[in-house]
Length: 475
Image (cartoon, rainbow, N blue to C red; front, side, top):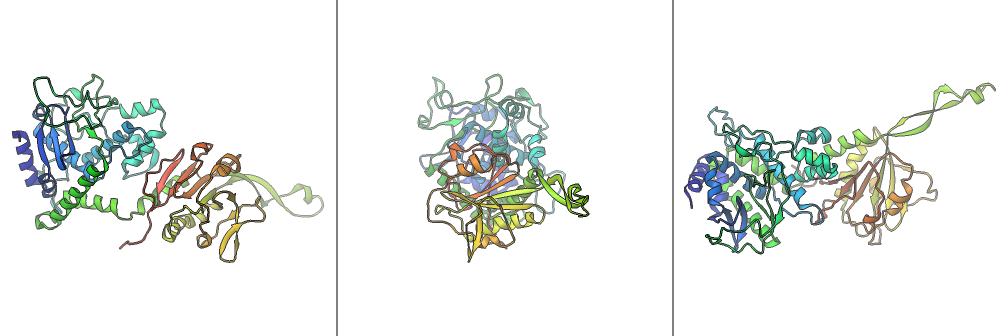
């Protein structure tokens, strides 16, 4: 290994045992074929390949920051091609924004210990010019602790011009007491390829065969590579190997008493736990805040505060008709046989909806191969005889929801017919296996509540997708 790598690893051991345990399982290999550095799996071993002249150009603290940056991608289980049908560039921008924002937010405390706020605690620093989550995201969504998926959905919903403006708006300075260098205000461009990215100079031989790998590197307006890691697209075996190393790192750190009060270890262990255990607080908060913002519709109603002039002349005091704002939510539940939600998922989802029912009028619909307005019959919901009258949800009604025998769900009757002329908030509770999803007419505002048991990523055709986190197993 080179001197900068040796110095960085020695420094990490003094500052963060957790980070040291992680990198003790990583091979470091110099390779002129890589533009910057990349954490990957080569020959079944977790490897950090780095370009020597790139590492030597960095300040020692910036290199340490990049090592933590790469480790956090592994900690957060970032799959750089997580959503195969979506823009890989936009996904990877969102993932880098999430990691960099975490580092910026914790740059003064990451290397500290519980109860220790000494002024001489080393800062966790990054090279300048790297993308962070824009302030506009927090203003628009109200999400205080976003995942990269939250950032990706927000970026995806922007127009191309707005997206470029936010991505290229210039990153904030994470407190680096150094000359910012040539990458201030860098503009990110897409670069997805193999040959231009992984090519050694003619007079140097690459240590590895990169021809089978694809990846993304971030480029500035001068067509220069930004000083951050290359995102390589790993296959399932490589991704599993990275996850296994992360698990082993956690096990080693938990057995080390010196890690007990290490803030970095506590932070990272908390992140790992929240990504593997049920975390209902964030999705409930997101759901409520989104509904409070959008759930309104205009309706006619009657009030005794205004008399009906038609009957008043005949001595009859009848309520008059007025037009006012009434807050309405329509909840559509997928009850097809493919639905994989268990009662805990349904109870959790309707636990939030029942809190909202104290403020809003909640109308319930059911979908399988057909759309139907439900009515109670014995101990289950069936299709109502009067389909033109909405069913108003009452507390505990979720117990009457039963999955059907059909394995296919058609949503066109809901989006392409039923919702014509409607303006209220729509909540769709589904496992996401929708037969005619490509044919749906866009309806706004829509929130898709996706069953926790779904393994594949769900990409909403419009609106916002929120994964349900059931309450089981909470302490």
